[in-house]
Image (tube, rainbow, N blue to C red; front, side, top):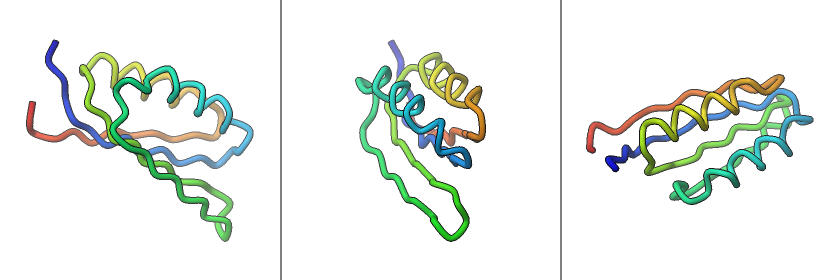
Length: 82
């Protein structure tokens, strides 16, 4: 199956959603190349960037599940390489 390289950016404004985010990321761990989390305490948010190499459908499912969480925003930026 063809895969895409993408960066998934997650902004967490509601820390109560953190456990659910981690569960979803664990569910897609086979596709995750790397992950970086930055707590921005001055603004009360956390920013997570996740690099994945996955089928388009898996990336869409991952971002969709995370995007439905309360107080969480998510976007994916795709590489041009396939």
